Length: 114
Length: 111
Image (cartoon, rainbow over all chains, first blue to last red; front, top):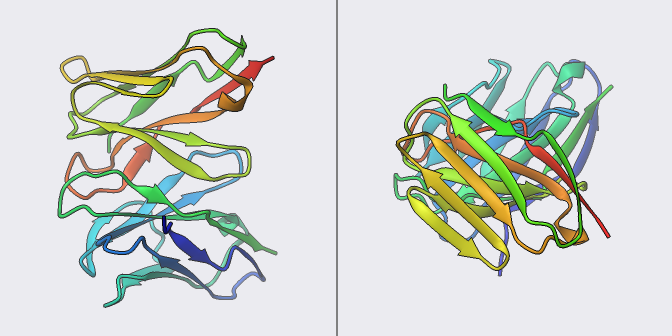
């Protein structure tokens, strides 16, 4: 069965650079979630989209933005990168229909900011 | 934001033992999630439940909505069950919300 696809899987950036992470949800899933997991930390919810509209907002820094496109894939744009942004970024998708449903997680993108 | 407490934080047991991991949360929710994270980082959803009990293989999850408490049980534990088990609840309390995660329980099953 198709799973959530994230690209790239690994990314190395310098401070103050920008990065774009991509997430391709499971086919027919309408909701995408972004999470950030720092080293030794539990995942933190950043933002979610349902039917291409922002659904819920967590602890996403103002330097980050995200959107969901017409084909339901989502991109997380990160600007003015800081050392503290080094983390594993998970995307998850669900067929939520506006309600709480099982979230299927992608393998994550490991971002290292030098 | 919902607060999620898990216990124990670390658990080492022998193969075959019955394992229980507990989770409590502060605000009423529509559903609670149990997740498994392996050392490589991948996260797998084990259960999503809003009432009663669910069973999948050797895993059983229960929830008591009134007491805001859930438990995850593993019967006949096996070394391949070694992982971090995470309890998570909706970030804002319901709907198509992101999740707030507990700190996780690091489980090691020794042969």
